[in-house]
Image 1 (cartoon, rainbow, N blue to C red):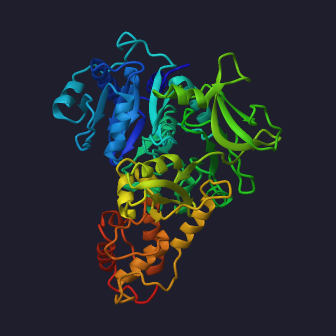
Image 2 (cartoon, helix red, strand yellow; image 1 turned 180 degrees about the vertical axis):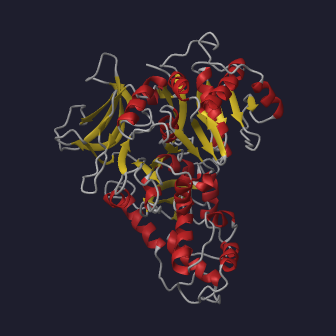
Image 3 (tube, one colour; image 1 turned 60 degrees about the horizontal axis):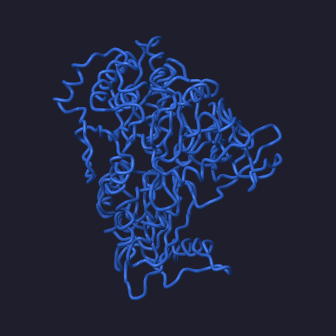
Length: 596
């Protein structure tokens, strides 16, 4: 089994002059990318990086990011991606847990980890000269601190944890050759094709994106995060760079128009359940696939497609090197057509959870159907196998959910809320549709303690990434329970829905406001969009529960209903809706009065 370094170097040998990465107006050839990565890899080796050591990487999307990731892998290390947008306490926990040998970052990324770790700032002038002075030819096992083998770590990705803290999934090189084979057999990227790097590097889907390009000879398209926002920004980027291959979650597909993008190209939906409506919208004129697989595998396990609009939506069949079992509670195979839990096995299985032997043993269990000593992963997903071998996803069997394509353990959100000294019990439910799905939290307090919803939201945001912070928090005297004494989550969902849809006649702004003013009408529009009971001009869109997808929806409604164009960036930069209203007014001084 080859490692990523070996696979990439074989592509360089035959496609060195081809363009490997495009970032803005920068075009980087395979030969240049390889040389830059080799130089940096030698510096990393000198800093102690080697097989089964981790290197934390904190960088924005750019061509240098790919240089760093490849250099880490060439040196024999595993990369630990740190999203600079994550809360400092969460990043500090990840670094403390993973204990990386080194943190590699760019000067523009400032992290307050509070954890001692050696740093390498790649664009510091002195560091840049040091890197440039190193030889640019390929590294060998003699060049590394120890021989690199397929069973060494490739990356560590942290995911939401049901116990209240994120857990690091440790993935090796063992399944990489199977991914390349699966990509060749399905989406078939080739030299001359352009593959979009959409997913954040903090998620395993990013590895699929860049491996699909750089391990096939195609070109990887990288763009800043604000140019990849679902909706018009994403559509503009797909068109601007003539992207031929893209992997996008259903939530992004649902708010992005397909006209004139990926025409004759290839699209894969993954990260959440694909729907018939999305297939009807995106499949015509393209090859569309549906992918499935948790972080505990090497990106994925199965692929379905190409999908036709008349097809039942399945998650397909396992790709080469992988196996999927449908088992009952006693680990017995269930008949075709009957739901059971999906167990995943094969080369792509992760090593386990970093520094969590107990959790690893409980989720990665003995495979009674495979070779001696083999393991399989209890996915928690339920589904069935059709007579033709296609697998159909049915539901989750636990408290894990997907919010905008991100994996969220409700238990981690609840544990964070319950960590506040005033909170007695906390429960979190999901409300809303695909693009507008959000977390609604409910808490009861300790006798005599007082706490506001705003305080609890701020408390959550100290350690949880943005997509895990509840969009609303309600403090109740006591939480509703079922007849058997468990929290009645159905009742909580009803309560969240009723709170989100108050009397439509209720004013959006302060009493006495002109209901026809741009400010008041914008507040009303935001209230409808976010499904919150009260919106004031001094409110912040994101603190009300907005996020990037909903920001795109807001800009879209302003365009479609008011006939004006407001840059998505303006929604992000406006501290209050009052500020945003000024931008709206300036965009078009002839906005009609009355409700749009």
